[in-house]
Image (cartoon, rainbow, N blue to C red; front, side, top):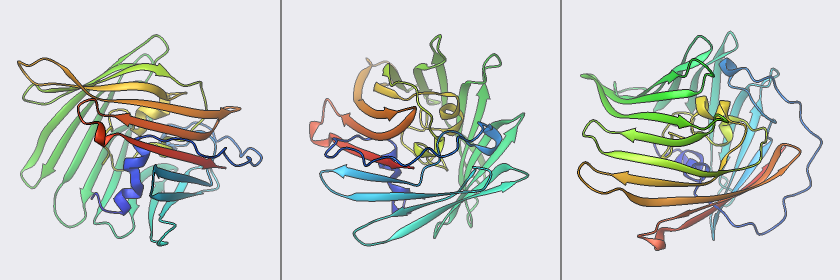
Length: 286
């Protein structure tokens, strides 16, 4: 499941980081702003493409195609050096997203909605009865995600991998996201600073089938209720009976003009392993 051009380098989209080398290109006139209807998973300006640079090498491009109702139809990952590409297609029924398929992949993503919100996201193998289920629970007052229960499944049934719980501030932004495994070990993401507000499509940052390292942050139900993105956050690990340690931290900058994201530079730092530090740049075209 993790091969499709590393699914569009969504490791990159998952936010490693970047350092800006050139000013973003001049922007074209604004695209229509689609109505934010979660059942169609539409939000923000409609992108034509996104150029991704993994500094100091490796460049990739993602091109977007939209339906007439502004729902996402397809995005294509392209390696400019080899012209190798992979398509990710979005399928709808009665205006609601149902499946996401990836070219040359043996898996697909399935979306199930309940009361206008994502109830479950499934990434399933098309031949073997295996995959992952993500079940979402929401806060009744504001529809922000309250919990995700993540299971692996096979012919024997489901096996709980982790439970994710959210804590928000008064502005409905996450303060802390805690993932707890059945054995009690925890992974905690803490947020320190946020960007200025801007309009964005959840698909800029999310991985359709949740095959993403930081899915606790970069999932469509959470991204849909946010009007900005974090600029500083950190990851902490705590095993049962041991002290908590910080394993990674992120610093991300955004170039925003008239609520439109033009450029993003993300850097990830590993305090114990600085040789792993990484930078990724995203340049957005509309």
